[in-house]
Length: 327
Image: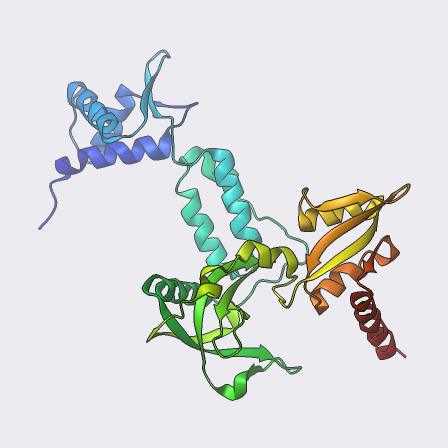
């Protein structure tokens, strides 16, 4: 049964105001009436005035622009144009999105802007060194993990890594992991799940895009003092690339050149003291890992481990192992 188009009048009016107007450009009353008639909706000025008032009452920020002739426009929106630009840039630079999913999300963001501004959002951001993941299952994985956390249930999943031939190799001998999901973390362009493992009383992390066949189990999630007191911010401050371990209180000797990168990594409130002209001692808690050592190595002698000596020796052995591979 065909819909009476006259009943769609208010919806048509709202759509044209959202798509065709903004703080700089509106539509006059004759234009509104003409647009409605083109859609097969008869309209009189008085009825359109009532409709505009109804839209204001509904919560749409319809304003009268004092021009000759008078124009009507939606001025206030959920997202300002600079915010939409940031959203588009964030979507396009996300490593965990495939190009297809990235393009689809950008199209959705563009619909939040009036038509006149959409072309300004239609750009392709280049991110140096970005390699798009090809695993779109990350969205379903995140959804399932969130469901498990909301229901306070454990999850069961397979986990894989890649071998030299780019083949997936299932970890744990191909057996399913059964863990308590604790927090989802976005780090270095990827989603990670921080879980609680009862057997080892620890908090392993898993790349969400490398989790497969996730199931929400009927087994209740573990609830204890360690899980309740888990501090993701504290973990993130010491973990590099989501490699976690026992935190080590370290003293780093940094030159002026390296301090910017130290602040980028640990924040402006990182504890530090000057240590002579052009040097500072930086006091941080870190977990020894290849990711931390790799981050440190990029600074050469501009940033080095002063204490503890055991951590410095471990770093030296890491570097020596790399050198030996080239001999």
